[in-house]
Image (cartoon, rainbow, N blue to C red; front, side, top):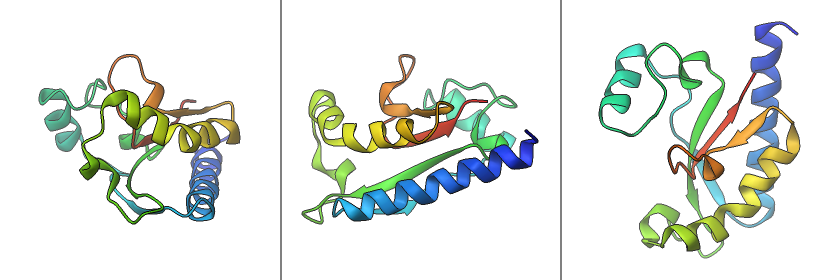
Length: 123
């Protein structure tokens, strides 16, 4: 599979994820999709990413961060939930993402950094 085919498959999966988010009564807006080397360096230096510049999935257009509003219209990051409660709240979305492809990985389940609003393709 060519790299452009992988990017195409990734974006089709993002479209399915957005549709699912709407079906459960939530809203999402786009965050980072493409990151420059300098932005990845900044995030890495700040401890907001474990990916070294030049290796990040955002730099390869194979990851997206989303902003979420739940079924009550509340901005999810603004709810100040515990990590445990945020995992419970975001689990259906993360599980849906990972169920779309064996190559999909949700940041909710990362062991190296907790990144619940991050969705990527790993190949």
